[in-house]
Amino acid sequence: MIAQNVNMTMDHFVMQPLKQKQDNKRQLHPLLEELEKTPITTVHQDSTIILTEDNLEIDDISAREITDMFETNKGVYYNNTREVSKFKLTVANLPEYVHNICIKDKKEKFQKIPYGLLKPYEVSQTKLNMQRNRYKGIYPYDDTRVVVRGGDTDYINASYIDGSRKRKAYIAALGPMAKQLGDFGQFWRMVWQQKVERIAMVTNLVEGEKTKCEQYWPDHGQCKLYGDIKVMCKDEKVYADLIWRQFTFSKVNFN
Image 1 (cartoon, one colour):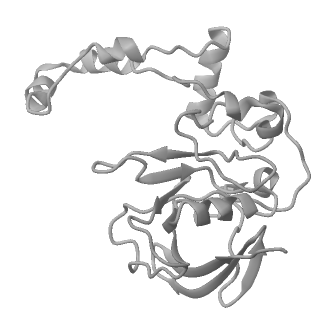
Image 2 (cartoon, one colour):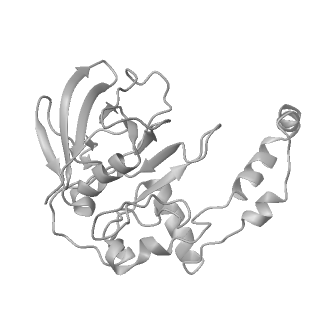
């Protein structure tokens, strides 16, 4: 199987599964011509265990503010999607609507946008799975999470995202870290099982002295085993704004 990785400067991950089934060898489309490619998650060997949500990190300033709002409201997440769905606006009428509303209206409507988690996310909160989360308040919903077969749990902090023409067109995941993913085997199992063709890594490994992600892939020309998935970095090209890599990987049967 062949996959491409593009490393850019942003914050999380997105992956795009293959659009059609192929054999164990898949030829990928070159580069990241359409930013419609993505997901990934990572793991390294680290025995630190996170057992409660209070031990998780807070992603950034806006996330911290949202967390403060949760605490002010006694930690309640409001499932107000029904209220939001009452307002209907067709695409054809959108320009006129935007033209007629003033800045005050925009601010008021922005404040009404639901925040927090709006659907059940119970699987992410079990004792076994809590340590696989990094940030407080960032969990996959139970109905859209990616299920990974073959490990001690089927959980990974990754979610399907619908595309404009296809359901579950992408997978979004946090920047892979060893503390959550151990040897990165769970991540690469997900890539293998979901037939991921492209991985967009929209972050640097370190940004502003903060580790955003850890290297979950082998160096150029090297081959490494992540769980039961063997990965080789066949090619690497460095550009001004991104790094493009090509991987081949296969599943190893331990019998």
